[in-house]
Length: 429
Image (cartoon, rainbow, N blue to C red):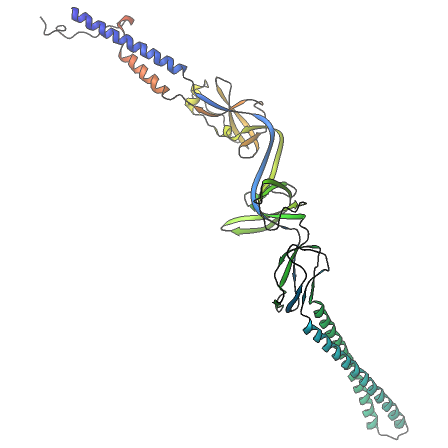
């Protein structure tokens, strides 16, 4: 009997220890709270922008070429020279063209002499016709003689007209020769700066099919433009008049400003990517920017001042049912739905003990922050961006419950298991 009682008390002690452990586990589970990460709803200025790349170039660029062929005799301009309209840039060898002018002048003199000679012949034919006509009236010459005199006068008059046409042709040839001679002097068509020189002294230029380019002039580098390539997914947001900021590699710590002047309709397809050219006007008073520089462009497509702003991470947060139950929300309750609502999002706010979901209408975004158009929340509200549940909390509760269900204390009213038949020590007596 003594051994039997000792065994019963040992079982009772084990039950008490298990019950105490379960209580400690339940208290630890209830005291462990989830970690709620929040971001603040603020007010401020929000800018929505798109990025692109482009190339700087002068607003007006003129290619200066030669309309005649010849060798370059003298150069009067070089790279970066500032030139004025009408200023001589280069001169070609003019000896050949001077010879052509002299030949054309000689041809003109000969043609004019022919006109004078034929005029004399016409006047003589007119006198002969007059004399023959008077004799014919007196019947002193035949009608055939009269007709021959008339034909001689008509022929002389036709020769005069032909020689006059030759004079006009000779004058045109002379003018052309003189123009070609003038074209041996290359002058600037605009006020500008020389950005390129393609020839050297002694080089021969040929203008057989097209005018060869000798110089490239930029009208005014104080006013430049950027040709930016806008992706087809963003071109619908770009409009003339929008503000632009851009950077160049030459000045990495400096930002330059511009304004969209035009969005060209011509599409450019490169490797199956469609882009459109946006022309951006840029002021370059300090002449820091150079033609050909690559610009990284940011186009401001929308701006909101004093807007209600929330970080985009808060709108991406989606709580699970376990999170909702742990933080005091109705267990099994569904999150607010944006079905049928345009520009809609669900924002979860935390009041220190529980979270609740709100339907908000969103506006512009810069990728990291989003504008809230309606006002279901106030400035300073805590928006939930992440929730971390306590590790192993559910496992602790489950094991404690299992332990308490398998061992019960006799002090709580439960009876110990019945002893084996015959007592603790052996077969029945």
